[in-house]
Length: 94
Image (cartoon, rainbow, N blue to C red; front, side):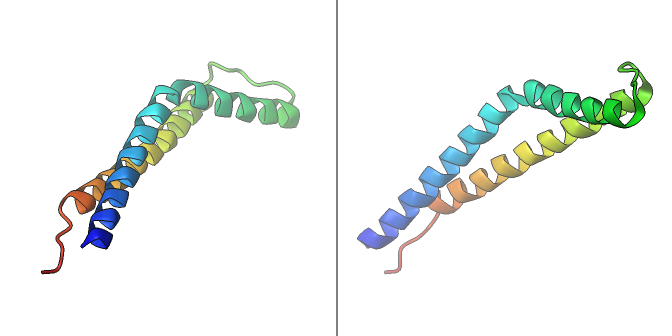
């Protein structure tokens, strides 16, 4: 019984930690996108010599990068939610 309770509490803790990580990562989403985009622009400048930062392709890259990070945060949040629900509704064997 105590082992089941411990397992349930562990699942709840993992779920809460993952949900917190998802919200913290969402707070830093804009800086992550800017950093990744700057690295991409730097590599394009090294290849081509010059890059127009307001071009439609750079704007599309920004959307793709932001979408990737947002999708990653959604996956982390949903995984945390699954752990939280599993920990809350785990039943003991009687």
